[in-house]
Image 1 (cartoon, rainbow, N blue to C red):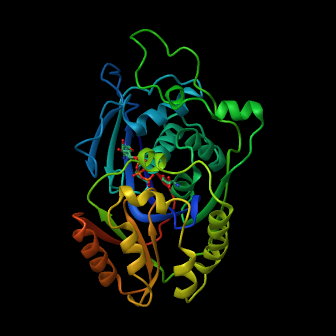
Image 2 (cartoon, rainbow, N blue to C red; image 1 turned 120 degrees about the vertical axis):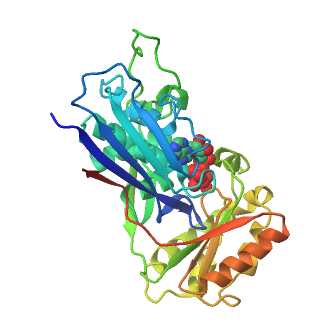
Image 3 (cartoon, rainbow, N blue to C red; image 1 turned 45 degrees about the vertical axis):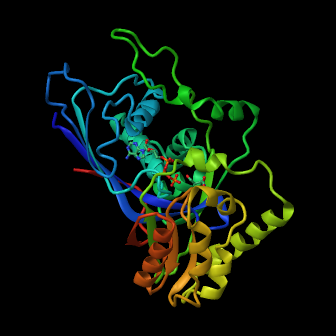
Length: 354
Ligand SMILES: Nc1ncnc2c1ncn2[C@@H]1O[C@H](COP(=O)(O)OP(=O)(O)OP(=O)(O)O)[C@@H](O)[C@H]1O
Ligand SMILES: N[C@@H](CCO)C(=O)O
């Protein structure tokens, strides 16, 4: 039998896009790729498996132990749910990563989706897109990043209300879904991990005007999503919820219209649900989002925090350098160094058999 080789490619994502907290996501042209070889011809099953190597973003900090690394732990979760308790022997995985960690560009969502696709391929499970999404949502429990990373484009999603038994199944602690340690030699894992309920997430893809590009202004510090969610309140006023709902309804349509209307979009990208609370974690955030406008920067459409931050996402049809340079000046005046990238909306995840 010949060796199996395949390549998995998953895009970065920006979630929220202003008012769509935990609802909308956009896939972007930075990618996480996995080159996987399974040596079916080798008889030697004594070497540890999989052998994991990394290049690119996070290569110097990411764990290479497959029981600690997020991508391989997620793959193992998918395999164990299908009665495959270990990776087969002789797998080598090289990860090349362009998505910076903890910056609001969906690095963990990309890693989770890559892990689900890896488990599906290694186990030859042939899971549907909906089922792949169910597995991803058992690990990353808000749908915006993982849905956009899996299916690509400008995407809106919700989590279905589950019945009591399914809610219990979907609410188990992450430590049960992703245990960190392998069983001792000769032992098995014990019972299988919790299987995701069917059809947890539902999504639609919106149109996207082809001339809109994304300037990502990326502060050179990490902010974990967990920390950026901890500062959010548990309840909101009706006024603030209506403020966001009105804008979200307009934004999803306005970004599909060619030529895009800056007046409509700039106001529609404002938010009162997460950005005001996250400004204490991101020096310069309110100044950047309020002083860079379509009037001061022709070509700008709207500007927001990307995901949980600290990256700022400016959607624009031109004037990219000026937008980035002026945002950089504001961040620098607060003592924050930034890098910036001009990105395009990207396709979703792919698996290519080589
Ligand atoms: N390619 C990867 N391989 C392994 N682990 C990863 C990878 N990408 C991300 N991670 C893990 O996810 C963590 C970052 O997740 P976090 O949710 O805090 O940020 P983010 O996903 O980049 O931001 P956001 O969800 O706001 O877009 C990293 O510190 C690392 O532990
Ligand atoms: N919607 C999420 C995205 C981050 O993963 C948040 O803003 O916390």
